[in-house]
Structure formats: C-alpha cells, structure tokens
Image (cartoon, rainbow, N blue to C red):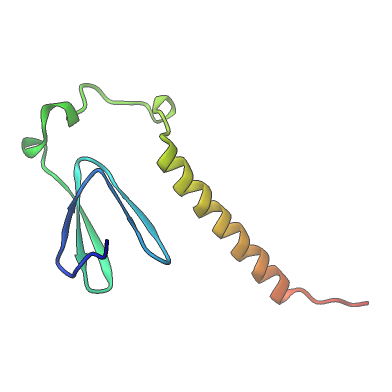
Length: 95
C-alpha cells in the first residue's frame, strides 16, 4: 500500500520503502511528510492503560521481538556491506 502525503500512521506498524524500514511503536504516530517521516509519541493521558508502563523496565530484561531483530540484522548487514565496498574502493595493491 502506498502512503500519500500527510498520512498519519498509528503504531504498531512497519513503514517499508526501497531505502528504509521504520518501526512505529504502539505509543507513537508517524506523519508522512514530503521527503521525511516525523515520529511523535502520544501523551500518557491519551494512551490506553495497557500501554502505560507499570514500572521502569531494564533494557537488558526486555524481549527482542522477531520484527525488531530482523530490522536490526538487515541494518547491521547493510553497514558491513557499505564498509566492505568502501574498503575495496580505497585499497591499493602494491604487487
């Protein structure tokens, strides 16, 4: 589905195009603008009670869901490929 300009996407959603993947968390909204996407967190007053954290969560104890894992895997792979390409372009053979 193509998103038109000025579309508002409520989380939980994935926005995917040729060059990026954006994960919109449940407490966020994405505004599709010309040339970029603006993410905005909803005020706690507007959130459903099940989305308001009961206590602070340690980063180490959070569960990494499969979608987020896939997004980060592809992101890191793209960075590694770009680094390899740059190394190939800048390397000099002395033999």
